[in-house]
Image 1: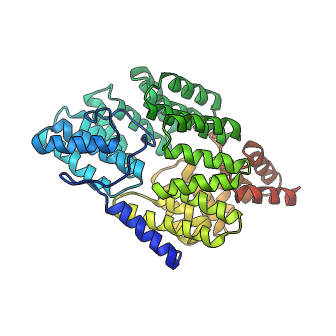
Image 2 (image 1 turned 120 degrees about the vertical axis):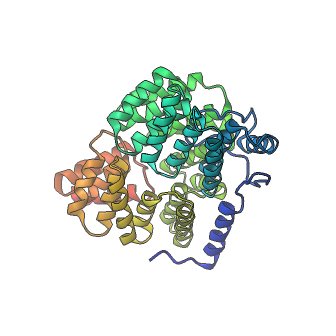
Image 3 (image 1 turned 135 degrees about the horizontal axis):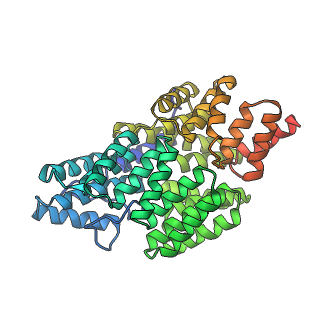
Length: 435
């Protein structure tokens, strides 16, 4: 059963629904959305958007297409921009707008339209249709082997399908063809997934050295901050997040990263302030759960429940707009919602793709449903690539027994002592009992 909404939370959920559905931009209309930050995972500059912000560029493209409706390149740019708006503003209702714009571009120019094909690949990836994203990115690259957006999306799709060796090859190939921020940040993440933290850091530092636009500086510095935080280096994480926010004071990913680093240092009040700012603008599942757990750690259970209920509101709206949200559902519901639903969602996601993240989600969903024997198999899969993620280590430690339990709980707290305001405390408690 889904969590029941209190009166105040129901009002917040309605506001969320209005934010996600009422601001969809149509040709000839106005969005009413705040200016977008840099892309959460930027792929490439969007042709036709000029030098202004994303929303400003969308309005300019809309005006151009009203006077030149047969501009296939303009429709491709607009469709891809809608994808970026949906991703950066937490607004899945824009995916339908993107779909229509990209279809119109392809109707006007079926052949040699790699921009529209790359846009369709980005749209599929944003909806978590990674098989579709891989297919469309390959079609785009058959037309233009040097297309930065298609090269980037192909890496994303392979990563999200758990095909890490192929993703590494694709990243090497993309780096040889189109080195730059979009490719280097993905190159870095593939290295990190394989356990090469030093290689991941070098790639990001190389990207940062070549970044000039404030949005690129903010994105890469935040990525360095996130990498540092996952290794438990909160000092570096805070410095890099500060650098990102100097480049772009409204960059939400940097605020979220700073919040996690502050929480890891024990600055709960500062972390709560940052996360409140994040979810007020972009109420996505990750920061909503993080804020809820901070409230929970402070004993503010009613406030925590409100955040978890908003996750359910977001996933419902995302699903209605064609987004596969099984992984989001599994991760949030396992600890903060319907445990049976979490297991169903995790199994469905595992059937589609075998990644370390889906393995971890399935392991944890099995655990909360009292099935640790099955869970251990998936927890071991989640930790076998070398990816250094303390929450994965913690989950393996919880479902294991004996020496294996002590080993993995110990790894979690040594790697990142503040990996979770709730989980880190529980890991230490279990370690005391296991010693």
